[in-house]
Length: 61
Image (cartoon, rainbow, N blue to C red):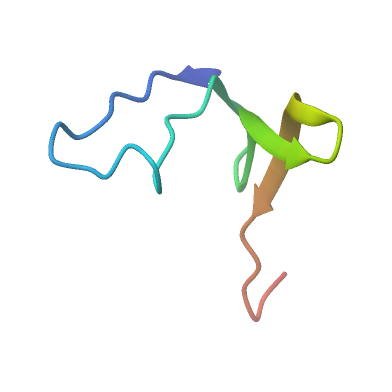
């Protein structure tokens, strides 16, 4: 597998939980998520893209 398709839970709070734009499987224990978020600044609302990498660590690694 190289990519996951994420579907939102219909009962989830759409303000607190936003479905990621993309989820990639980079290695056996690493995921890369791409999210779009709105930031409220003095200049107004800005849309940003946030990339988060999750990696599994164990006592062995």
